[in-house]
Image 1: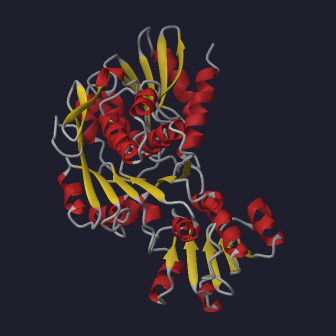
Image 2: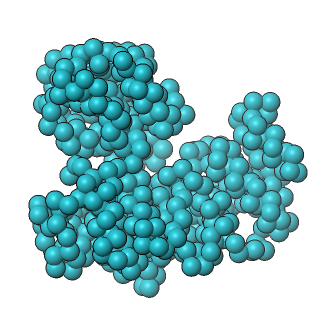
Image 3: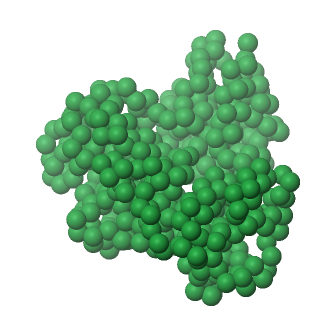
Length: 450
């Protein structure tokens, strides 16, 4: 870890706890900052806040004082989920106080370079693929970011001969200043999180931040099939490496129905790839390109592709019961992700969906609803989902209170050879703290079936 002097005797406010806030507060304390943590949860209900206080960190819990910034803070590190219209964040910006997420701290202290991966869908799969390829190739990579491991905590232990493979959300990327990955990836760009960003332009600009600080010795891997992504690629100073799923190309990495091509030459046959679903081809191309650039042996890349079947909560096979198959796709927090999951199957499917109401349309899913025989809906969007499914001609429509009920109803409706798919098309925050807990509930319910 680089022992930087930037924060010595500086007053820093950490807004919001959770894993990233705790890690940021502890790191800044080690770096000599005067740290104050502010979190809405009452102190007596927050073991994290109690632990930070025992280390000599100032803790303000249970409220967000409007005059908090009058204390003379020089930096604000915020939880990525806190929006920029939050009064304290707005006040900090108006005062010219840098507002960062802990990703920026990770970059400032890391001895290891970063690979930064973002996109509307496929981030976790791509990040895991890259990590597995480099790890199998003996490069001792680290993994961090939105995938569940706090980046600044990982960066504390990183060594110069390692690389940190980092999944980055738009929320995290809005809070950077000089963060600069060695290799950056923009997998795709679709309308998402507009309740946070306000406009598709602001959302796209946040995603572009993954490459905005790169220079000509860095590399930007991008989706050449999407005009909106190509437009951003034209703005970076990094070397460009495009990927395309639309047939053989002479530049970058590409694929047709039979082969993956590197610089126009056959690289490997697609039939050897274990990961199902056409939607995963973008993730595979981006990951393979990264591994090649990182000097990973071809046989290692092939080995990973012939054994990797997916990540937890992303079209994850859970169980077969009486000739029915159950899949956990809890990470599908938007309609595009659910559309991709539905497209991966052609068997009769019972779809479990619903969650936080953001007012988004489900129309993207319509053309893939023809093999959906039943929809079991839950959460704030359940009424709209039922109406949408009815308009698609789905035969069986059920509303339930929670995931456990949904699994029971879906099982009762199912027949041999059916697919029972949890793919919510919505965020989890109306009923769960995150999509992982929602997926774990589904797995638990499925495993209890007798």
